[in-house]
Image 1 (cartoon, rainbow, N blue to C red):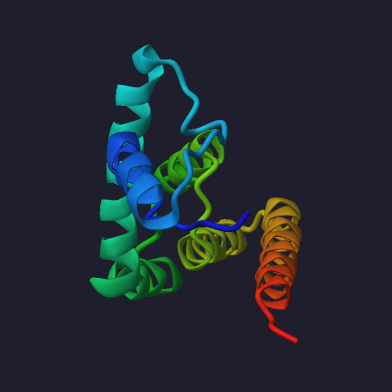
Image 2 (tube, rainbow, N blue to C red):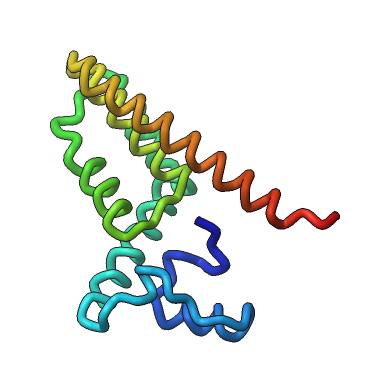
Length: 146
C-alpha cells in the first residue's frame, strides 16, 4: 500500500490533504467507512499514533525489551496483542512499530518457555517484513523516471 498522507490523521484531514495537495479523493476502505464507524477509526488511529511515538521515539520498546529479558517477567502479552489486532483492524501497518511489537511477543513467549508460539510470531514477523520490503521496492520502482 502506498500512502500519500499521514495515515494516523483523522479521515477529514487525510481527505482534505489528498484533495488539496494531490488532487484526488481517496476511496480506500478506511476513507470509505460510514460516518458511524469513522469516529471510532479516528480514535483508533490517534491511539496508534501515540503508541508509535512512545515506542519508536520515547524509548518504550527498549524499556519493555529489557524488562522481558531481565528478571521481572511481563505478566501478559495482551497489550502487545491488542495493539497488533488494532493495527490489523485499521489496515494501519507501521512497519517499525509492528516489528517491535512482534519482537516483544517473541521475547515474551521465549522467556515463558513457549517456543511454539514464539516461532509462529517469528514467522509472522518475517512474512510481514518481507511483504513490506516488496511494497516499498514496488513503490520506488514505480516512481523511477526513465
